[in-house]
Image (cartoon, rainbow, N blue to C red):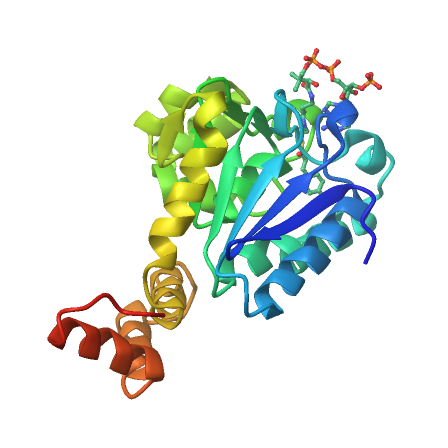
Length: 257
Ligand code: DAK
């Protein structure tokens, strides 16, 4: 598929997907969400891809939110539909992907942009990044999972504060409250993200996928996370990768996954 608003590049087991609307600060419009959906599914179905990295084009923005020009005229019905479509197409897709997704936050991560970063499994921010959920200032609330995922990451108190004040915070503050995993200089962001991806790729993709599934279970209503862990743990046994991992240890060699 030819993309208009994103770039997708697969190299050495890593699929880097770049939101490419720098003049609009990489704002997420419907087409961009559709293209991300397509590219992420393509990476999931491509055996050569082990880790995904999401980032934004340019030095200014990761994603400065949903495209305000596009949703400004929406009715209540259209808003609800766009929200539930977006959850399924992109945000839940990313969160539940069995391949790790790293967001490399190269600048503004606002509204829907921060929500996409929060749906990712790991967040690495450039020192220059600014993060926030400014929605209440526009007369809406975070509509792509932000009210839930921010509280999961930072605790309820900070989430309430960030959402109600609509304040932007810098990368160091985001690190302090657990919103991002690491802060690095902008020039190091790509290399650092690739190194993190490469570190993950030394491990069993099957086990990594099962670990994502088990951790996510804790945040799903009506799901017993411990039971899900037991199931996911059991699912590892007897697999080729389990045999390779345990044999490599016993034979004092590196596993080849
Ligand atoms: N949407 C559309 N265009 C945007 C944009 C956005 N979110 N953010 C920036 N741009 C555009 C600007 O309009 C400007 O375009 P031109 O005027 O040059 O044509 C260009 O990007 C450069 O922006 P600025 O000139 O404003 O750049 P500055 O450096 O002065 O300021 C800024 C950077 C990030 C502080 C500022 O651009 C800004 O405040 N941007 C808006 C941030 C924001 O409020 N984002 C939206 C959050 S609300 C929904 C579900 C979820 C959502 C909505 C609906 N449904 C299910 C219906 C989520 C909503 C959000 O994400």
